[in-house]
Length: 113
Length: 114
Image 1 (cartoon, each protein chain N blue to C red):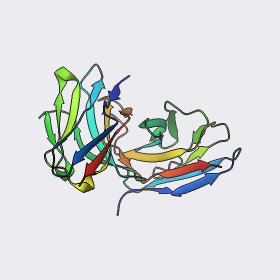
Image 2 (cartoon, rainbow over the protein chains, first blue to last red):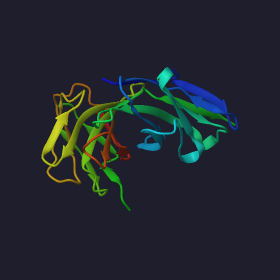
Image 3 (cartoon, chains in turn purple, blue):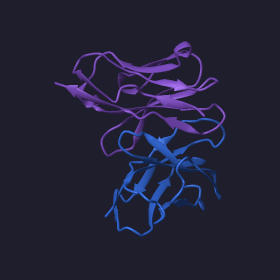
C-alpha cells in the first residue's frame, strides 16, 4: 500500500521568510499527490494537487509544490510566509485507480512576527 | 452554498454508550469517507462508501458502524466496543467513486468520552 512521510513534525519560520515543507511518498506507480491545510479545530482545505503533466503545480494562497519522481518527493513551498499561514499541513497520496488516500502525520507551522 | 456539514461540533459521551455523528453533503458527490484524527498521527480511514447502500471498512473500522441510505448522508456510529473513542472525526466526500479524486472535508466533530 502507498504511504507518506512528513519528516518535520514542527517548523517555525519568521514572517516574510521562505518556506519548504517536505513530503516523501512510497508507491510503485505514478501517484496522485495532494497537500491540505488545517487550521486548529477545523476541517482540511485543499491547497494543491498533482495528477499528471507539469511537475511544478501552483495552488491557492501562493503555495506551490514540485513532484520529483527520482526522489519520491512532493515538497510544498511558499516564497514569503504570512502570519495567517500558521496551521498544520498534510501531504497525501492516492493510487490512480481508487479512492484509498493515505495521509502523512502532518507538519505544524508556526510563524514568528 | 454547497458543502459538507458535520454535527454536532462537540460531543460528549459516557463510557458504554453508543453515539452517532452526522455527515451531510449537498455536492452531489458519489463517494464519502470517515476519518479519525489523533495528535501526531494524521488521518486514519474508518469507513468509506462509493455508492448508496454500499460501504467498505478502512484501516480502523473496529468499534464503528456506518450506513449509506441516501447519497447525501453518511452517518457514523461510535459503539461501546470502540476502546478509545476520544478523537476528532472528519467526514469527506469526493465527486467520483472510480479512481483517485480530490476529497473535500467537513469541519469535524470532536468526541470526548467522559
